[in-house]
Picture 1 (tube, rainbow, N blue to C red):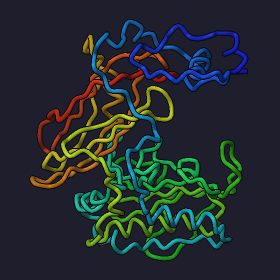
Picture 2 (picture 1 turned 30 degrees about the horizontal axis):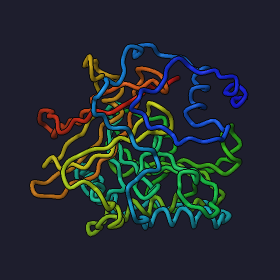
Picture 3 (picture 1 turned 45 degrees about the vertical axis):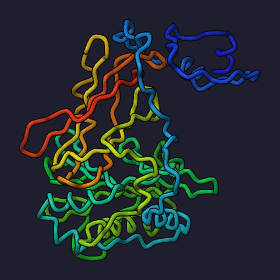
Length: 378
């Protein structure tokens, strides 16, 4: 159907400005990704708040990189990913049990700053705030770098391997500070023993018929949450996740891999935008060292009018924690956010600012860059 619509010459009124990259000439009649996006936009709600905005002629703007453009030259050897693939491939039958004692977590669970400090030593952990609650999510390497995914969930489709991969869906997230009651608290397991994991058959819409489990392990004010959808009846992925938390909290843990800092990483503070899974969704990768513990936050403004872009949503979604030292190296920090003003393929210039607020201090701007952006369509 989409090809037929394209052949008829239909398109949305918005066109990419002259600064967008041009594809090489081709005799192929196959629609491009931009063609498909324009046709899809015909069936979505449009936002006209950005209709008058564009990229000013002659303005030097950056263009977001693609999801797969990492700049890394080495494959990251990640022990958790290896364990996940091995567990999902083995597809061992039950019983589904985990050990909830977690002695290293129990030892430091009363000191949230210490827990955060230990996790932050590894580039594989993303520590962030969402609606006032602080979390740490374990990222997996994708295309040569640790990459943020929507809400922290990973499947085999996120992994850049050419060989056959077992089907799975996985997320490892730590809630730092219990805060308000969560709907997930019902999944908390008893502490201090080897306990059974409740497993559902996985026959709900959107799932692939694989057994599904969600568990929480609480020590003090720290809750470890693990989602697993795999053929491993013994919940091998969940057990690997809990073991990874214990490893990361070890006092002598030194991170995941030297390849976590890719070749070509900035030697001075900087940040880069990458396109997310749809237009208007962005991932920001920063390399900073603010010299103290605090929170990074993204702010965005339309370039010509200085109009704030999705200020509350971007601020809430993009907050990530960083720990700097006076003479320490640059540290990676990754945030994700969505710009809602505008429509797919209607590009305009935006000033993207990176702000830092030290714990107990006042916010200050670290960096700003001008990017060509588009809005997400509902």
